[in-house]
Image (cartoon, rainbow, N blue to C red; front, side):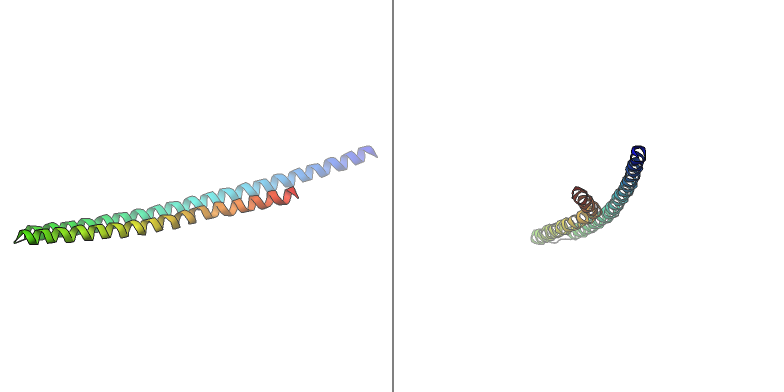
Length: 133
């Protein structure tokens, strides 16, 4: 009777252990998938933001070139100062707008990158909570 009881307990412990191992494997797989999704989102976002910066740089260069051409044809110092003043103001306004746009884009990207990991954290917290009960 005691050997039978021991065998039953050993079998139950082994099955419980095997199930825990399977759950751990699945959980780890989910974590790796979340990490991959997060990295993919980060890479796409960085590429997109890089393109936006390149576009802004190109636009700024074109604006500066056009201003230089305008300065080459000025007829008076007043006209030159007006062109420089307009260029400085528009460059400043453009830089502020671009910085604001990029700041919003970075914040949005950060939220998108963290989302898959945050979901895995919630699952882990729930598993710990249910195991503790």
